[in-house]
Length: 333
Image (cartoon, rainbow, N blue to C red; front, side, top):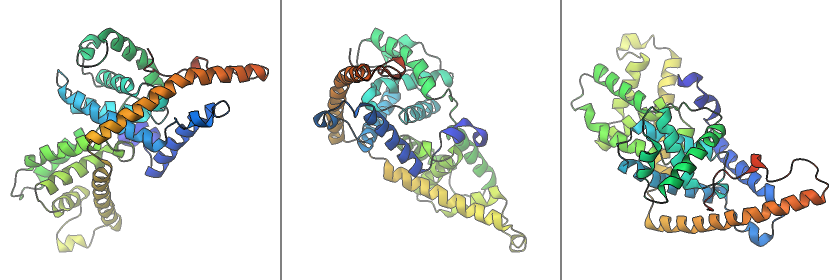
């Protein structure tokens, strides 16, 4: 259950906390080299905002990869993979990894967790860049490191099952609707696809994201907000009858209003955060990728400076650059 899951306990944040975690991770990476870096070299380092833009660009490319993947990938695999990716980069920084390869590793791990069986050879056949053998080796090498950074919390609660449950419940409880509820499915799936390129996975429960997808689908069909409100009233147990309504508990009414408010907020957040990746953004990503390559080429030099400073200081503490600090996987080959 989500309410007792590691997802809720360890990987769900407020928007403010999420921004703070990203900033802290970025600062820690910078601080590791601040004693041995020049001001000119420091200018190469990217900000948390730039890191997030790179992540969004990679997420967009990954969803296109998933849509073309054969055999066809289940929606839950995509959701799990993107959840792994977003969690991983709350601990790692793109400057210290191959962000593209990490995404591929997240997809392959998600397929295993979701029991979508495919061999590594068949997986890399779907990748249109790089050498298949090297890709396979890098993905398999990444797998234990990914599991470690995820703290072995590999169960991801997706909103698709709650969505199907809510839809079935609506069909049962809302018998007087004058349209086919199945007509909202395509727009609801589009909402989920857009949500994958936002932070809602890290902030809201899957059941509420599912309700937001239903409401989005209703809006796309030109339907009233009152349909979802009426469904929630029935689900919570608030009667319409005026005499029965006198016995409604205040906490039930409060729960209804909170849920409606939260659902509308999730819809607004997806609309605000989702930005279709344009050609200009892809060009920006190439620029950031170039900066990352420069940083990754610089890191061995900086690590050697850190070792020299460590030796000059009397070899006190752990030697810099040992395996515990090694880059996850870089594009330097």
